[in-house]
Image 1: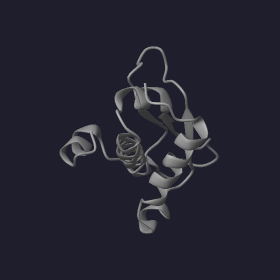
Image 2: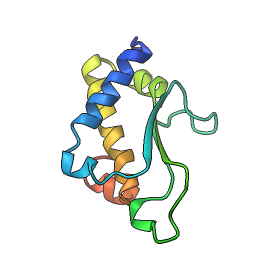
Image 3: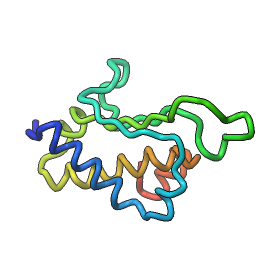
Length: 116
């Protein structure tokens, strides 16, 4: 497995978020991004997870709720990548994929766009 500290991986996630165009990040609302070492045991190969209510599903009822949560998993990413460059690329794809879920874009569309 490729070695990378949690701090280095968190920096890659932050850099991937910084590469999202500002006109999109300004629209993100009530969402927090986290890095965890491993996903739930039920899905050990999971690279990222979005939990919450997509912007497209929010209505007048949406108030006073906890932030949506995007989690990027370090362990599976490092295990599937052969080089630091691979980790950078995979982290960017995963971050964009999970942010897209926040905007209401489903997996089928993301796969068609190359972010599957």
